[in-house]
Image (cartoon, rainbow, N blue to C red; front, side):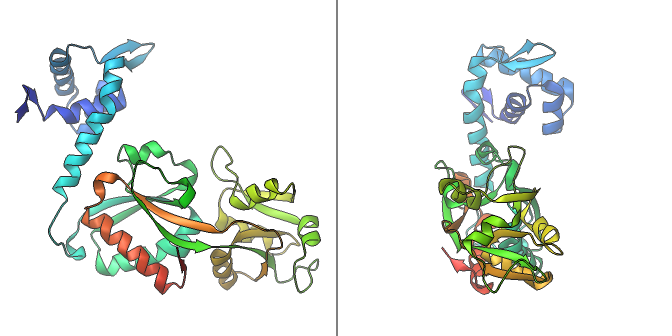
Length: 306
């Protein structure tokens, strides 16, 4: 099909070329031969009257005009993809779909594991890939590289729809054999004891509890730093160290490890988690089933709805 003499079949090649900046890598992305993509690039150059890709060092770079095309072309393809997935009604058991979700291991533990269990029974054709929130970039949602993001409500993109999912607070955990603790955890003891903390991603993004401490001019003795929340208990058990984690996660960890859950003596803002999806996927039956199921998981797991 052609619009204004442009073969719309070439848009997928154009999108791949703009994203990969390489004929060979674009050919791999669209599952065509390199000569076929080279021929498509020649036709696109002729149609737009612009070279689109130009030599730059050992690779290729986009011309300014090509850069202006990248997001509109990607957006058009995402809209077309979303349109093909619309159905008046669709039984979840009939959905065949790969779905990528970005979330922390905390969110996986308290909410996503329940989703995955439900999916096995109700929507077995949905295949999930879970990616860590620590390496996530907002551009991945813009470009359709991920389907859903579960993050702090304060961190959602204004360009796409979202909805609050659940609320949580912070508590402290300590080994049941910790000899440095009494019945409760005081502020002085909190600041005196060694801590296990989570620093997420290459940029070592601080967590909400660290941000709260810094805002209050407080410093804890961080003796062990780990890249995820669920690695914390292994560094706490058998020591006099403590850690500050999300309350719902703390309660789950205490079922698996010899841990005490204690009230945190430091004031930390409440957690509000939200789920976000691409604006063109608001009518996607698979996305809607996951959103609805997550809301039901929040209720059945006795999480606090947001």
